[in-house]
Length: 295
Image (cartoon, rainbow, N blue to C red):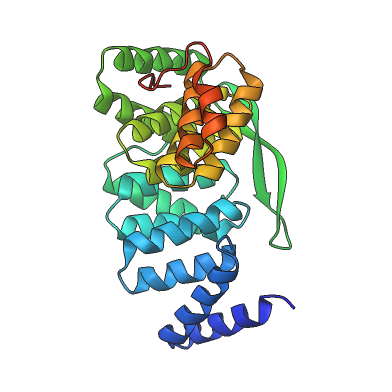
């Protein structure tokens, strides 16, 4: 027996305006499977309609995390952020969607509306070409992986990265965040910009905003240990320790000498009551509870 029948009933109630019945069915599905993408999405949309933005965004984000290939999940999450008066985060999310291949008129329209409202220019192509992994919509509505042509000025990007590093080293974190957002909007395939932005959000205790950004950074560079570590910190702050541990272990498999990551793993294991494991980790040379660097 599957969850298709109660899901179909929930959607029918939702479409007919029987919101209490729809909500009850969505929640019943989530009690059985907290990661159910369609139930999370349906409940998130329903809560957006009721003005319960904080809870709605958690459900929409969970739906997107579980099924990032579903194009309208990106759109719903970005629209929810906009309605919750978080337009900068909405712009980041729709930029990630476009980078992943969600090149639809609705997505382009939302990107233009957000950029106009925030006073940002529309990204302009410049003449150096390369390829990046992308996901594109097929004729049957499904998604498939492909290679997408991107346009990047490599010299300009290198100079911008140096400028971003200079702001970080000078402790000018607010200008650094703004620049990282601008670079990511201009080139959605700029892993370094997304990594820096996500790390700054983690350090500012904005873990819910950091998670989708660092997930994109991980998609762009799946073997970057610093990205994995910082995404683990975001999940740890969001009270998802199992997800955090998996990321720390992946990072340490790539960089066994990564002391900060050993430290983060040990603190997470300690919080989970895995005392023996955490004591072993905390004896790793270089691990320190106050070692918390940036990107």
